[in-house]
Length: 240
Image (cartoon, rainbow, N blue to C red):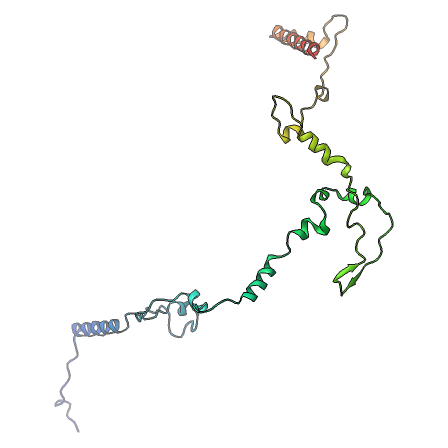
């Protein structure tokens, strides 16, 4: 039997010793894992989440950092581009040349100023019958027979609109500068405006409604203004 009285008891460390021991362990951890970010969540929470992966800090190794672009697109200084592939891709992304849009069938641009109605119903040699059915030719890679309106043998009429506008725009007058806006939107004549007609009095007598107005104050001013208005209108009519 062991006598409890003879057993030496180890004195428990005091509060100060515990604090010093804890600070020492913390300083060792901080010195060893200083580059690690303190986790805000438990290790069992959000495992493999992109947020935790983004917060991982890589310990610097003395090399320069690499961006995502340099990682994905590796630079090869000795690489020479393939000229055939480059030429093919350039033609592919350029699209159709301009002559396929503006000079189709080698027609001049002046014939593009034609309305759809003029092109269908007022053209020279218009045929009201339906055109023949077309079929696709695999050898020529085109529809056969082609539309009969190409090329146009005679110029379209366009109702003379272009010639009229060109003559109107290029008309010059001495001492006057005119723009396309002032030529297109001319000032209408005076006869186009609505005219007001005064009420004629019978045998020089005033109408009954004026007799009622004379009973109020300011009737003299009203009569003077009315007479002046009549005189101005007569003077304007005589000047025209």
